[in-house]
Amino acid sequence: MAANTLQNIYSELDWRGSIHQTTDRERLCSLLAENPQTVYAGFDPTSDGLHIGNFVPLMMLRRFQKAGHCPIVLAGGATGMIGDPSGKSEERNLLSAEQIEHNLQGIMDELGQFLDFESARPAILVNNYDWMKEWSYLTFLRDVGKHFPVNQMLAKESVKSRLDQSEAGMSYTEFSYMLLQAYDFVHLRQAYGCNLQVGGSDQWGNITAGIELGRRMGVGTLHGLTCPLLTKSDGAKMGKTEQGAIWLSAEKTSPYAFYQYWFNTDDADIDNCLRLLTELTEEEISALGEDRQTNPQNRQSQQRLAESLTLLVHGQQGLTGARRASEVLFGATISEMSDSDLTEIFADVPSEKLSRDTLGGEGLSIVDALCQAGLAKSRSDARRTVDQGGAYVNNARIENLDYRLGPGDLASETVVVLRSGKKRYALLKFL
Image (cartoon, one colour):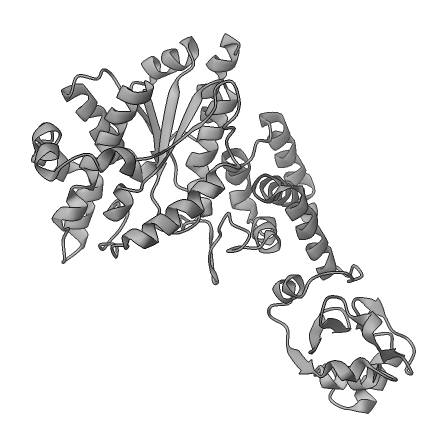
């Protein structure tokens, strides 16, 4: 890997706004420019998948690898048993060993798609339970716990804010979380020569605790770098909807819903998202900013963000499906889709269930279909809709009053999509 590539990683993270805090900036820049470094980020299995908030540190690891460094992804099988108090106003519910194992498998399966585990400097995937299970409680307290001054632990923001804001305070279990994460850093230095830990800004206290532990245990100088949390311009967390979090798994958040979330990003947030989350160059992002100023109605920035992220997270097939689903809402003809796709796209429109036999024989008249779907108050109202050119089956205009729906009109396994006018949709499900 060329030296000038290594020299560019800190400046790239800087212009992207990916750096919130860092230890000894000058020394870290020098270290990253001199030789390939091993860098790690941890992800606790609080769920069986990763959400968009996890994506910022994950993208940092990806950028480090592309710049010639070696990323370690740590899945927190041990730390997940306790739960990180950082950024939490109350204690997490403890997960069972079975649930943690299930969640671990889910996130480990997802991590592999963002990092290269087969290159000349492959990414490394580890589970901190593999080394923590070897410790006894007394030995850990003697060998590790003795290096932690309680007054310094109390001064950490993750602890201090909980004690200040919560009447329940903090249990000893959560209080000890910092020790486990700090020891992870020491272990990774000893086992893999890891010098740098990255994470969200809420991890700064845990990261610096690991750096201090490394100094006290004599493993050498360690470094830390945090990225900003993904927030909107008003300070609210990004990646939340009325339906819940935006997940990286297609089973939890469909490629269509994922695409639509980013396509609807506010102009005030779009530049930050393009820099933090995509691999677009500084020149491309700058050009998009100029277009946004002169042609805001084009929403080219939103389209590039949605396409770039959907391609990265869900691949070409996911992006193609998301584009197609989006085109449906702009009037594209609907055919050969799945029931789940159509249900996702038209989640908020009324639907009616009819017998599959209704499509047999002469089929169902367009007039009766509009009435059955609730798009017409009466048969005369339905006829008027057809006469005025406002009746659509699967987004294809129907101008013949004698038109009858048959099996060939199914847009998916069981669904026909009806439309009245420009925006009034309804589904007929033939079961």
